[in-house]
Length: 88
Image (cartoon, rainbow, N blue to C red; front, side, top):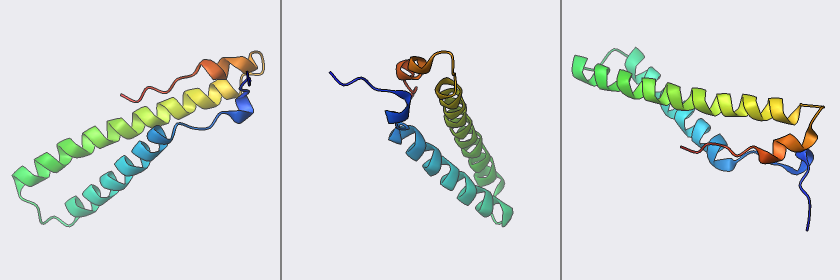
């Protein structure tokens, strides 16, 4: 049986990839909105989508921050092994 240590843990690809996709989509959405060529209805829908994307990005950043805290805890190096990202 191979024991995992904090140095062998890798970030969950789905969390990182999800963050990058959400951030890319959010940036594109902001660019479209800044052009000012959307109708009011389109702008409202874009704004709602932007809020959802922002929340997804913030959740991924919160998970990354927690992971860094767990990995940097000198008092309990094995604690990071129990970290399971929430891919909700």
